[in-house]
Length: 171
Image 1 (tube, helix red, strand yellow):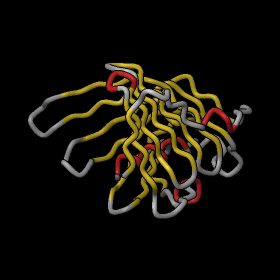
Image 2: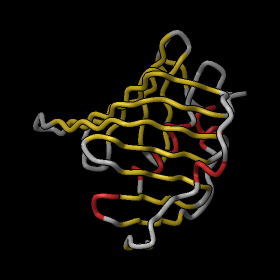
Image 3: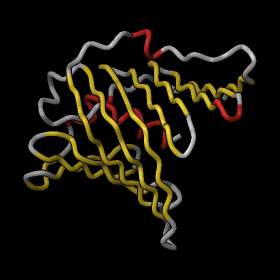
Image 4: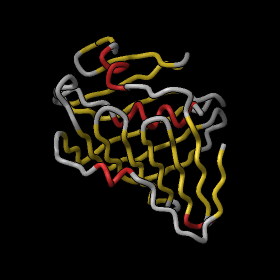
């Protein structure tokens, strides 16, 4: 579940003007490093709007769509022909969480959420990457490129598109 909260947290960060940002789009590369030196790499893109809507589209190594829509997360996995729907206990405004990030130096901030410390790196006042350790002690690094903020995005983009033949798992 922490992974889902991180996904939502990530979409809401942009230090160019975090207090007035209304949307966020970017390409990303997510690298997962385990304690033994193993490495997994994922790529994709994200788009999100304030206060709590996001669509993470993973393209490599396989297609996966993660929709965050208020108190619900829907994970659509085309290769498995399934969708997983998870209800969150409460709606969380991650823009407010980000407001509590503390500046460490010119381009580095930290914030804590649910006992996890996130380190946020910026470059020229734009989000560059986020790093944290997950529940299994893996180090996660997400690098962002091609950032666009405050562009109009339709709410309909955040409604999951689940083909009728898919299995639906509700948790």
